[in-house]
Image 1 (cartoon, helix red, strand yellow):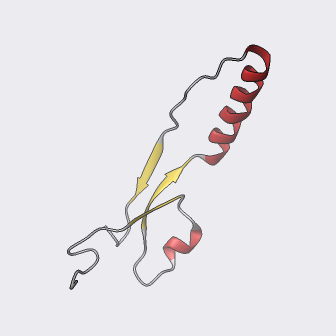
Image 2: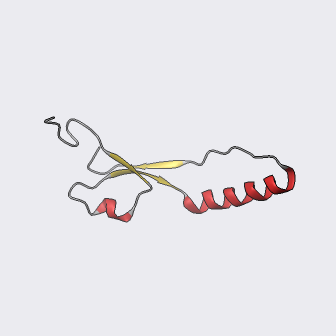
Length: 69
């Protein structure tokens, strides 16, 4: 296809795995707050078991810009 990263196309990963820093072209990624997600999941599960109600939540994420975008 003749496309080059990042000149022609951006590549973005998810979860900010440590390997993303050490590839030939460090990978731009989305970093999520896993401890916060786990806590909210546990709280929501307890709430559901007690009341039958599920609360929908949005967890903030961070864009970590590296060389692939």
